[in-house]
Length: 421
Image (cartoon, rainbow, N blue to C red; front, top):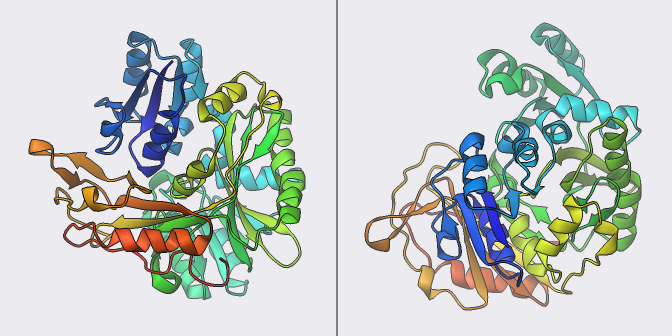
């Protein structure tokens, strides 16, 4: 089989890495890819949002399966375009992807189908939203409706902070059109977990759970990022809770979308808050999480290509998805200044000095002159290790991450540390 993976981040490197292990695969192309994917696939100089060019090259190269990594091309209907061109594609349609691309839509769906989530009100008027917030108590959550690269959610500890977030979204337009509408939501306390599932629109098969770290500094301090690290499995997420999530959240969500004539085929990501009583949905994503994918896929025993083919053919109930009984930890190395302004084109050294049982997934990297690997983004690398326990995997990661260097590099030193492990 010839596979095309769309995207260029750490998630896509992990997907290419796992897909390359399938005996069914003869060629892999990644568009646009990074310096890591270039080592195990052929990078194509096509951006993930250039759908016309991606469809054309897929036809030219006779691609047997396209795998869509990022949310933006899914939001723009890339899966529909591939299907129209007769190319099998793993990733939901534009209509189904709206579960991530519009928080207003997602909240309305959850409320109408009684899917557990925080109480919320949606607004398309700044004045009305402001009046509502001024009558509430903090903490309170403000969410821009559309895609905002993981940065459109503010957990406001005070009402002035909430009003500032509202102004940023709806008046200053820091998120562009994504802030035309907002969701004002009650604050939920508990522990967050990322619960993903494969689904063909009918059958739902959960993946192993993971937890990610969103803020830039140790101790969950600083501004939100795309994710500074992750681990799997979280010790607090018991099998009984996993069954409850599948029964009360995952399956009802897929059924609700089907009733809305939005057949969902791909990976459904449920960002959950786990309290002492019941799990509730914080958000949905219409694709694999990043950086969760980097700690989930190393634990997958079943051929990922087989799973994807079963999903898109509506035969997921005919395949057994198996997982390794181990643990995995991943830590992100970021550029100096991230998630704010940062420099790029900085040489990376030490990549060849990591242990053989440690994997380095590339995100913001590119290959420069003479084969030198350079930084090209905010989140640059994800250093990942598997162990019998979280502690063992964590020790491997931190013993190796210090061997990698680039100017300004920083990373959290508390990933997978604490009672949650």
